[in-house]
Length: 564
Image 1 (tube, helix red, strand yellow):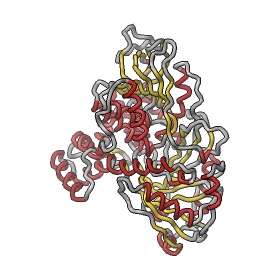
Image 2 (cartoon, rainbow, N blue to C red):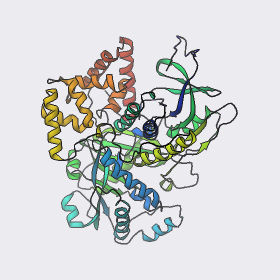
Image 3 (cartoon, rainbow, N blue to C red):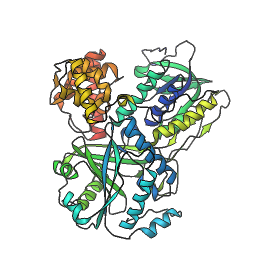
Image 4 (cartoon, rainbow, N blue to C red):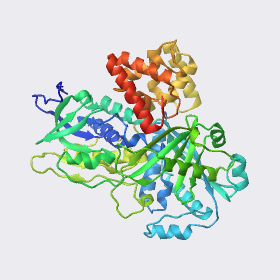
């Protein structure tokens, strides 16, 4: 890629536009999944994102890889079948980042909600306000049925009140029973996005991935993109895929397209420093009804309790934050569910919010808007020589299936054939991941001998990075220097991230390459140390160093309620 940077602003290079088979705009989970798929098929692709990889909506999920139990209410049986299958595949293909999550559903009656569920299936615009044991039992049986393909986890069970309260003493005695089943959690969603991008680059070295880069114009069949610090270039794609999530309609305007494809909803979450709650959860998620019938959830996440989520109409993804009303809603729901515990806003260590890129569905209750996906195509017109495919909807769990569908359309339009299936293709550190205790022990022993690292350190980084931990450990050597206040991270680890993972800004490391910010573990001394390490690795001058610190602090405070 050829860039030119002017002092007064971007200036266009005189070089001819660089050709690519596909330009993908948006490096969230859908864009990254498609990038990997197309690169595996031998297409030369460019993926760009106006922020960091995975920094938009893909950074604000509930962190669940799930089959969509609640979609059964809407009659979206095909989506449930696809979601449970994709969940099972991810447990295999990304075993370093996707883990089984035992789940409990508290039930407050035996038969309530059946009539409302039938009305919803027949087209009612309101969801059931309460789901009794009979309805939950039917739903879990269906869930087991649809999850049978490539099954990894146990089937559901129903548990009586006495057993449930013995397991979770703080639970409300108003329950009559509990349904139990398994879904999954992604321990570092932003890393999974990054690893998809990295896998694509490995599969097709002629491809490129650029963060902090956005579309700034178009002339005929050439697209102008502006990168970090105002660098400008032109590319000539044969086809464009708009994977910008809630920004899709805005991006389409660059191509002269006036679309109204997105009608997103805001989903907010909080993380609590609440050891008693984490202890009672004991590795389980509680998937429960709030008083208004909407679904909430709480589960352990890196030593904290993650609580979510809301579902509120919203249309400004650049300004969305978790507000006081949403926090009150979470606190009231938790207090009603777990009266044996106390909850207070002082326990919140992090909050985040994003807009789901759902299809424009005016007049439909937000909880009933489909989470399915589509990819409408706008054919070439006038001097625009390329088609534009917009990726609408979708969800974390089904990104691979969505990518495969769109990739097949792209391959057909470009006259190419599929040569690799991604169904059983490992992701990033999931390649050759040891999944049994003996295999894990053998891997740790081998890598400890290779690198001189302590076996305990090898195990920690294996859990964090999968088999790519080998590179970090080799970079660290036998005596890594720990970060201040964060002894399980090292100076060499941050240096390795800065040099090898396309981290351009301080916030890229704090919020996405690591889980330090989201878990509330970040301290001011650690922040200053990480910034200094990045400045040295990336060659920042003093002004850039201070600007990065100021920008990171502003993002942490304004978007996440973290003041450092």
